[in-house]
Length: 460
Image 1 (tube, rainbow, N blue to C red):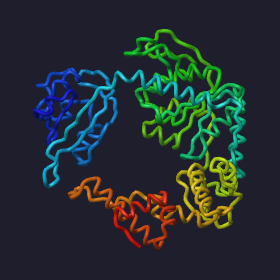
Image 2: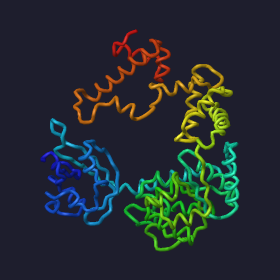
Image 3: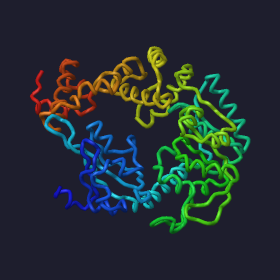
Image 4: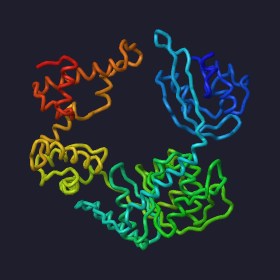
């Protein structure tokens, strides 16, 4: 343990029975406890704020898979809440059974205010780039979707909150902007926050703002609630917002008053709320991801967007739109598609919905430009599904990886080289040693391909 004792970082080591066998002074100072009160105790007994599902050390002990640079909130035995980054890894016997699990921890709480400020600026700049009267293009001829847009336009004429539910990629933010641009606040900027993209420790200060001295380094800063005053606030992935923050948001929605983090004075705002979530509200409430009282307050007007699978008649119109949209970006001159291209799209499942369709069309356009065709056809789609140009499933690739508990006799560099050599050999065989076609399929320059073939001694 002498090596670890010389470390300036906090560390803890447990054995296979979850007993703490090493715990240094840096850890003790971080946790506000004495070393002797932690050593030789079971991990979960010594740290009651941890559970089997939240403890990185127990996860690694059970899986034998290291976890590197994990950021997390942590409550010390003394009750202090901190922001930490940790790396946790196993030490194994020759038979691959675990002897110990080591966790090295760094306190990054002092970076919170800096991260908070950067996120705040990013969100603010994101919205200032979007002009209030920016034209929206919602492409649909589907009767159900057109009826939903009619409802959304009706809701827009009122100050009532709107809840938009729909699968990922169905266009929730697009509909939110449609509502805003048909509302009385259309000449102001809609403020947007993706609740799932901001760390739980920062979302409260991002929303409510801060007062100087609220925490180390905090300054007077407006939150998004204040920035959205007199306009629309769009809360995407509302079910990702921590429950305790939802409780505070509820009061703002109810009476319009809030208090910045660390402040004593209340502020009054008038905001039109639009929220979105990618699952049914009832499910989110049941899974404790959404407060029922907040849902009842925000879900006065509801729009449930259909999946692409339920509006297949829109696929030709969407494809036409994406072609027009991406032709200038790709410097291509594609002027349409063949019937078999659309039939193939209509026969597929679309778990990523319209966003996934746009990506498929974009990649098909790239393939089309390489074959000098002027219309998208079945060939461009088939090319995308070949094993060297797209990952069809995680399972397919997992089968190529070594079994977790088996020993790997080569280094990572050697292992990757072996895999690359096999990939090149398979591609050369599949495309009958056509260098240009292999390079195109693998998306590398022809000169790079030839260099790698020489490197691995692969010949025709």
